[in-house]
Image 1 (cartoon, helix red, strand yellow):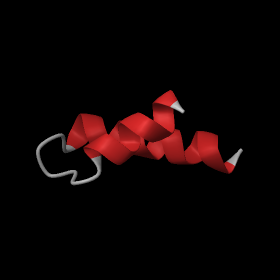
Image 2: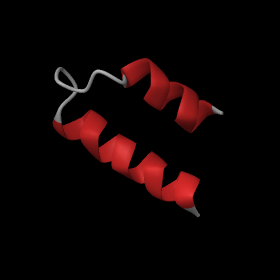
Image 3: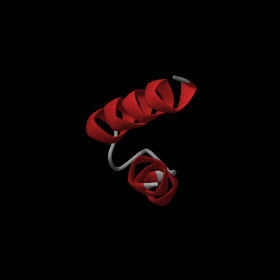
Image 4: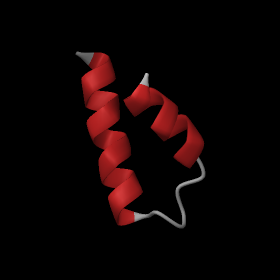
Length: 33
């Protein structure tokens, strides 16, 4: 449940602030893993 919420939050951040978000690789690993 928490992972899903984190994935959604990461996706929103990635979509809203792709250039500002410093955790792009981490987000990819979270979504992919």
